[in-house]
Image (cartoon, rainbow, N blue to C red; front, side, top):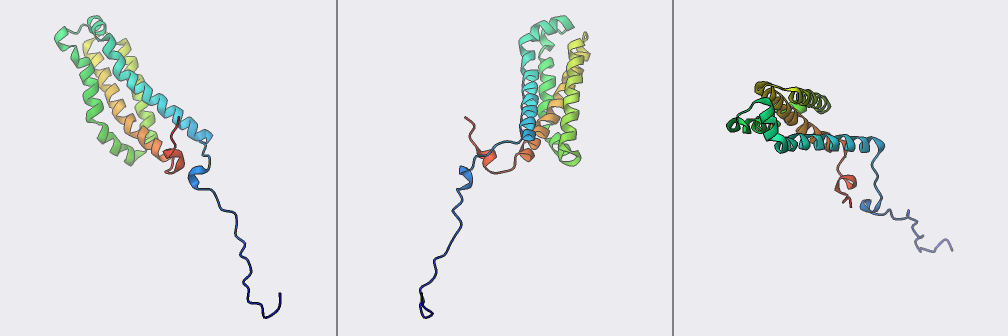
Amino acid sequence: MTANDTTPLPQFTAPAQPPAQDIPVRMTTRQRLVMVLLLTASFTLAVDFSILNVALPRIGADVGFSLEHLQWIATSFALCAAGFTLLFGRVADLFGRKRLFIAGMALLGIGSLIGGLANDPGLLLTARVAQGLATAAVTPAALSLLTTSFPEGTLRTKHWA
């Protein structure tokens, strides 16, 4: 190479990085714990809603509901769960998702205990209303916790097979 040589020097570049979706993504221990907790809570809510329908005639007979009023055991839960979900979603935004999730799960436990021990139609309906309100509180809080625990990107869009 002489002083008058104008041949450009070769450019050295770093090796190309693989695309982001090719990098294996793993959940952290905390994310796994959050996922298990939220899935368990969702399962508990689903079971709480549906298991009653199987035993409804027996529960009504044991507590003293007449046949024409038996639907109120399921309806009191469903009305509260559906009617207050949006309100509790806003409450979760204002006062904290985790706080509302924990309070809702505690209310669900208390409502389930009272419902299991109920020997009066009014007490059973009160317990079912409490369970419906707990479901309305836990559902948006759990979904919000799920989306904030797993940031957008490959971990969220990964297809788990």
